[in-house]
Amino acid sequence: MNAFVLYGRNDLRREQRPVPAVGPSAVLIRVVRAGICGSDMHYYGEGRVGDFIPQMPFVLGHEISGEVIECGTEVSAFRKGDRVIVEPAIPCGACTACRRGRYNLCGSMKVLGSASALPHMDGGFADFVVVPSRACFLLPDSLSYQEGALVEPLAVAVHAVARGASVTGKSVLVTGAGTIGEMTLMVCRAAGAARIGVTDINAFARGFAKSHGADEVFDPAAEDFPDTARAFVADGFDIVFEASGAAPALKQGLDLAARGATVVQVGMLPPSVTLNLGLITSKELQMVGSFRYANSFEASLELLTNKRIDVKSVVTDVFKFDDTQKALAHAMGNGEALKVHIEH
Image (cartoon, rainbow, N blue to C red; front, side, top):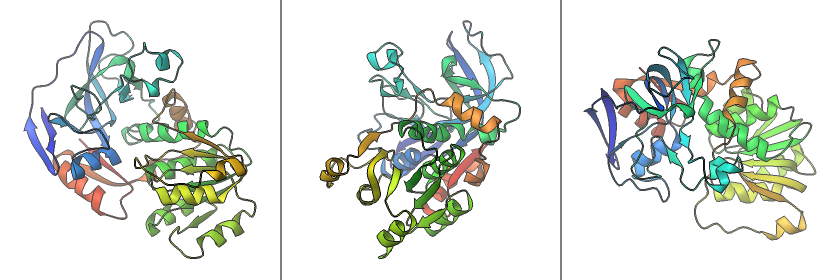
């Protein structure tokens, strides 16, 4: 099969590899769609994602939809020809976090297309990928492979909104209008948020948010931003979702949060951030983290099948598999690229 293998920073090579063997509890999937995530861009452009530094060549890509080609001898839930999506973060299932249902916090997590564990698990920038059957979900006939490959980032937003408790009837601020921020906006709108504001330094991202459910959008770099935001919600926002991973955005979110508000940190922050933590006490803020997702794929599929949200428009560009390297460069260098998909 053909695969795009990462060897290091800006070193992605197309190679011929054997089709991976299928274990007893695994399935072989022919990849139809694969989305490019921020982590793929970091691995390609920087040679690492935070503390995850590749120790060997591996295949990127974890936002996957495709067709089952072969099932292991112990697999009964799927059969050849099934359309599936993949939950790429695969927990051990036995640790304390897993037993408590918070398997996204598993200390032995393995992730497709990531250097987070050794050996690294190959991802979906290839013709075929093998995954445990327990990581697969049937893709309903009413949903396209494009929508299927968007379930993974949607699950991040669904989990984040669940971490913030009920948004119904509340004012919401989303800082950062990348894919996760836009999807958080959509989920909040579907969940009945009363007023939603979105911030981003990118004009295209702000425009997209405005046309997809935001009541107001703000440029956080503008001098009058704090005043315009407070004019939008005089007493502050009830819930803040920080989806940019930028320390200045979190600082602004804490300032604009209402007294008694909840702040959900979704974006991955740098290791060292200076904040006015006194605001957490004086405002009685509840600050919680949101990491990947847990038990969120079913809810995400339900949102899509019931037509409560439409995520297709998040895909701004589609490249053929042969042009995977061009797709990565485009995703990294184009300010109007939101979600880039690779299609077989």
